[in-house]
Length: 153
Image (tube, rainbow, N blue to C red):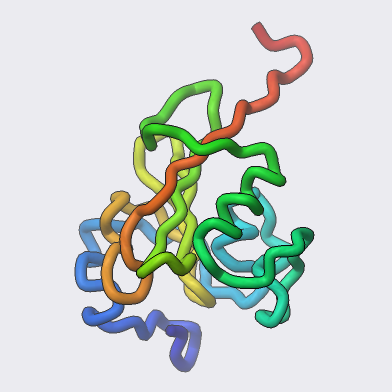
């Protein structure tokens, strides 16, 4: 997906809805982290099941969607009925294609989603802007409480 000079090289076939009016670029392309790490607030590691060359703390070696749900539960998330912004919750959505994990995005205050697109950039986008043959569709919403800061009201 990244071409010479770090320019985006995805095709309309991969992201048929991801047009310039559907996203805002928020970082340059990098190999330093992936969407799973980004959803956890990490920019120093790639995370995924064994066999992909990534860090993975669980004994569930496949990229099936259920294993990623378990992975995010391990990190304090629980399945959520909705993907709407709530001030006291951090929310993510796991994408899948035919039962296989393909992508994860996290919700930001604006009501848009933020993603690390493979080796490409991070961007804010409409939820369905990354839907298509490459990432499939939103499958499972998850949430976890945002810890309160000492001294906050």
